[in-house]
Amino acid sequence: MKKLIKIYGERNTNTNYMSQLLKLNLYAQELPSVVPSHIAKLQKIFPGKELIRNLYFNLTYKSNLGWKHSCVRPAAALKKCEIVDANLCFVTITKNPYSWLLSLHRRPYHQRDAKELDFETFLKTPWDTVTRDNTKRTLRNPIELWNIKNSSYLQLAELNTLNITTESIFEDPKAIIDSISDQFSISKLSDDFVNFEQSTKDDSKDSNYYRDYYLNEKWRDQLSREAISIINKSLNKTTMDAFGYKVIL
Image 1: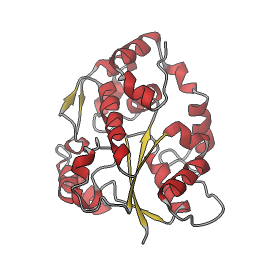
Image 2: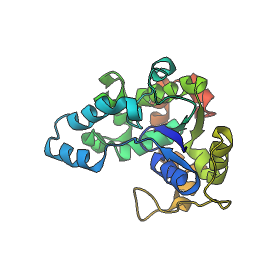
Image 3: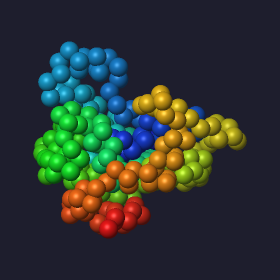
């Protein structure tokens, strides 16, 4: 029987890339984490407040454990789902909050108007969630979104869980696949590691571009002193420490 893997990670953390790596390298099956195509088409007909997508994940939660970008439910609640057993493994992905916020500003998803704001204003503007985020309706700012989502991953420690970072994937994707294989006793499809070089969102960029951008922290050039100050005031430092991130002074 194939091991089941559930990936959780906020928007812009390389969940799509991780899915491709799992598919290319491991004898495992990823639990569905986004809506199927027919639901996505139906949503376009009834855009509203993302009602169709939210309803889908509400009705199918016990079989897929929700949207991959959602705040993870407490371990005690997850254990009540039959699918959560020794055959299921969790992989969570966390990204440096500073670079993640820059990414969210460029691609704000459900809040398209946010893209028109300058970055400093964006950081101080309340963030409206969708129901499948599994958080309160309105957050103080997008920084709180990072705090809540990533803190929720830490409480999965009592289950079969591996917490990784976007940066560690770029640094050595083979090592990440090795870790998942070893920790969860998942067989590999081949002795040779297979990478996925194409960007899942921008055809003009490949893994080398993103590796250079994130590992050499070129995103720092886009941060003003004001932006850093705003971010630092709201960041959960305990969660930062847990994932090995340092506060920019």
